[in-house]
Image (cartoon, rainbow, N blue to C red; front, side, top):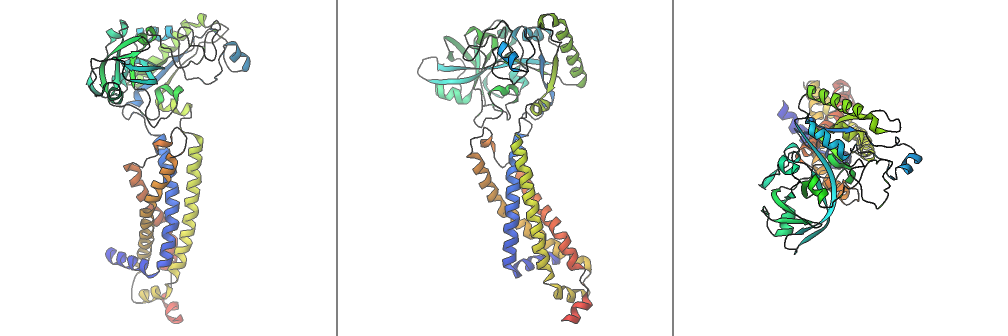
Length: 447
């Protein structure tokens, strides 16, 4: 019966080509608008490090020797123009927390900027982002090595100027991806390349949001020990807050000793480890409360990746609003399609009455028309695919930092056709039920 119903449904599509085209176009436009916005939301809200991010936490304590921020007077006192906090800590706190080693893995991160020059001086990349970090970063964040190795904790402690670069930078500076053993000059210091990695750009760039949440072309292309980077004269990109004694300001280099400029990430694999580390952080904050000054209470936080992204509104509100608008547009299209299908099906009342009189059960009539609705919406889904690609291409032309990420992946490709079938089933239920209720006697008498 299913095969026969499918044949009747396909025949029904061919019998009324004008209304078929109208239903297909209406469905395709609604699906394309909805899938374009859903795809962008899917990309922006995706897990940046699947299998790892649920074990990563940002640790923070407040030991800045200044009044709590929150009003213009406090901001002026600290000579800080930016009010947003990225939960960065001071160098002394980072060193103390790392030395305590209360986590399975732990690392500090700070973005810096410098010219990257090949050891022969023939090639250079101007003002590139450099990630100053520690030896646990590469294994902890799942960075894939192509050649060589990452640096060791001993090299961290000895402040050895070594670096790990990505393959794209190696090709630009040295003409080959295998640049192990070569050196990159940062300011006046040569950093020996010990490893080459695959280009690494998790989206969003959650571990250092101060340089942007998203980047279509990646972020840092060179990783170096934090202490060695400081020795070379590099300074952190920015800071959350500074001691009141720090007389910095716009255009003045950040002082990592008196400014909170380091992010501290830890890997905690169990809920017990999370609870223990949270208590450890609070104990550390209470022990250093006397140094905080200005009557500040001891504050500490331990925030997971998902919570950290929600807290910083990584997914813009405009993206969610567009999804709601596109969903409303799809709903409007579904209402119109349901009306078109009702008119289309009821035109066949005489034909349906004859079938019912000849013994066709209501369920057969109902199944035929639901299948016809599903087929026409599936054709609309096929047409919606190029329209969705067009919508995503238009998004990629925008100037937003996340626009370049708008790509249709296999999961969303499958979701498009699943949505098309669901729309077909939903909008076809009422029209199919109405035509299945046709009384054969009345139709035959009217004929």
